[in-house]
Image 1 (cartoon, one colour):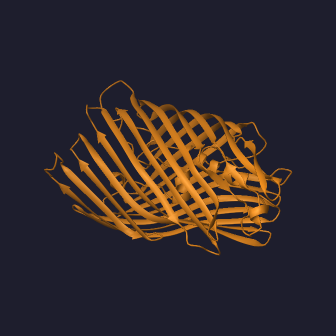
Image 2: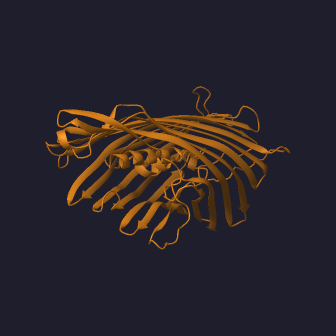
Image 3: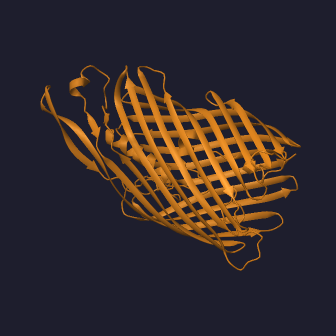
Length: 499
C-alpha cells in the first residue's frame, strides 16, 4: 500500500507539470484539486459583449479502466452561469457554478478494497467593477477595477486591477482567496477509513505588457499560490496539507495580435510586412508540498519536501494569416529529499511492534517532452474554426527509493532494507488534437466549443498508465480478458447571449 501511495503522489505531480499551455497556464493538477483555472475577467472583455449571459459546461475524462472486478474511474464535470451588465464605466454581475470531481477504485490493492472520493463545490459570487479614465497617476491613462465576493467552502474573494498607458502597454494585477476540500473514503475488508482534506488557497498574479516598437509586444508575468489546511478530526483521523507554487514567464511577439485565453492558434496583426509573425515564450514553475496524516493524534504519514520543477520553451512561426507552425520542449522534474515516513496500519497499540514501517529516501523523476505541430484557422461570416495538432515524443527516467523496516531480534532490534521502483511512462510518442469552434448563431447569440484529445503510441509496456497530458487517448475496445480503458479527453461548451 505504501508503494502504491507514493507512486500515486509521483503520478499526480507528473500530471501537474506535464500539460503547461503557454499563455493559458492551465494545469491538470490545478483542475484536479482546485477546479477551473483562473481567467482574467478584465481580459475576457475583448471577447464578450458589454452586457451578456453565459452558460458554460466542461467535462474531463481523466482515466477509466475496467478489468474483471477491478475498477478505476476518475472524471471531472463543471457548469457555470454568469451574467454581466455594463453601463458606462460601471460593471455589475453574478456567477453561479458547480464543480464535481469523482474518484473510484475497486479491488486495486486487495480483493476487498473500495475507494470513493469527491470534490463537490457549489460557488456563488457577485461582481462589481468600474473604469476610471484620464488619470494623472504615473502617466496612467486608464484604471479598471473588478472585485468579486461570494461563497465557496467559506468566503471567496477576488480583485483585479488594470493600469493602461494608451497603446504603450498595461499592468494587470489579480489576487484571490477561496476554500476547497477533497474527501476520500477507503473500505478494506469491512473497515472504513475517512481521509478528508479541507484547505484554503491564496493566489497573487501579475502581468506586465509593453509595446516598445510597432509590431513588437513583450509580456512578462509571475505569480505565487499557497494552499494549506488542517482537517477536523473525524473518527480519529485528521490531515494537514501545505503546498506552494511559484511561476514566472515571458513572451515576445512580432507582428501578432494579442492572444486570448480561448484561442488555439496565433494570428497575424495588421502590419504591412512580408516577414512571418513570430512568438517566443517560456515558463518556469517551482512547487513544494508537505502532507501529514494523523490517527488519534499520532502521525502515521509524513510526506515532506516533495518538490516539482517545470520548464517550457515554445516557438511559433506564423507565415500566413490563417496558418502557423510551432515546436518546443518541456521538462518536468519531481524530487524528494525530505524526512518522510509511512506506517500502513498504525491503528492499534500492537502496531508499535507488528506493523510495517516505511521511509521514503532521496527520489527523483524526470520527463522530457519535445513537440512539433501545425495550426490552422478557417473563418466565415457565421463561424470560426481553429485546429491545432502536434506530435510529441517523450523521454523519462527516475528512481523511487524506499526503506522498509524488518525485525532483527523481535521485538527489540530492527533494521531497514532498501528497495527501489522506477516510475515510467510506457509510451514514447503521442498525437494531440485541440479543436475550437465559434458559431455566430444570430447577432446576439454565440456558441463556442473546444476540446482536447491525446493518443499515445509506441508502447514499451503491457501495463496501461496515464499519458503525460492526463489521459490514455482514444477508447480501447474490450479485449478477451474483459478489459476496457479510455481517458485523456476534455470537452468545453459555452452559450453566450448578448443583452
